[in-house]
Length: 50
Image (cartoon, rainbow, N blue to C red; front, side, top):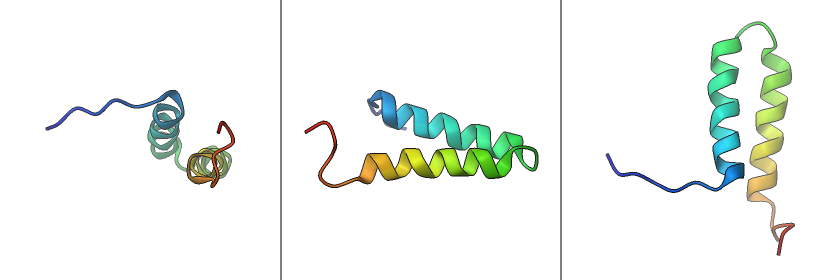
């Protein structure tokens, strides 16, 4: 398996998805919203930081 370097936003999204799966069904909707917001920020064009 190859290793990949992640920036902090990418790592935060992965951790949010893992927490979402662990939290089902308690808190699922809030964590789903949070993960979707992180994803939307990552794919936003043009990126905010540029």
